[in-house]
Length: 269
Image 1 (spheres, one colour):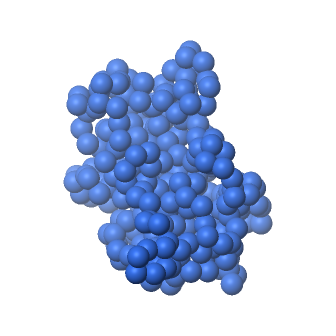
Image 2 (tube, rainbow, N blue to C red):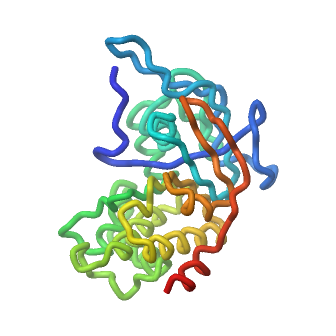
Image 3 (cartoon, one colour):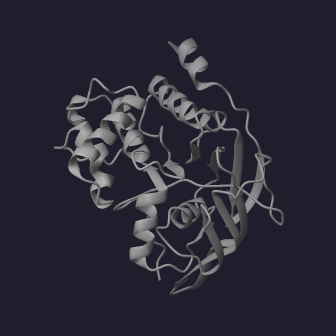
């Protein structure tokens, strides 16, 4: 069985946290948003079994802002698949916002993704012929929300990311940074438990990257849990917590510098 691609089709994610045996951050005693315990993921190939993740124990509390780092092949993409409910673990347990999800069916996982997780992709993944408003409203179609309410919520989300004056623009009429803001609004529109972002600044220039990270920090300060994957240490430095993977194991979990992206953007300009 080959390892599923997180980049093709519907989603790429981001991910995080820890527990004692498990190491956990000190953000409170409420039920964690994410709890992984003894999680493994193996794939059978012609050359034998590949152990992509080994005994992962992770906790992410509500309101955290976490960066995930690691070299290619470290297991972070597999972890994103699992936390994003795009794949199921070989062994171990996964509780998302109080709900056991590791043995749910494909249809049940799809419902969880729609209800609990907001995805942000490196390449935006917007519908080219649809307006910003229509793109943001799309997850609400799958949630069975009526058209009038869909458009109201989509407009509210676009206002939240500063694009209230771009509601009817198509992706081709927007800059890269504006397209990523539309993607973030789409991630927000269902009021998810977590936003998972895979390389959210990977397709952007430096100034626009700072603007996007500033937006994610603002959302986090307003209570949104955010987990993002990055290969760039300077982008990880905006996180409150940095988790590093290597060889399928969680290697390091430490506080992040929590630099202020808005201040860096102001200085950059």
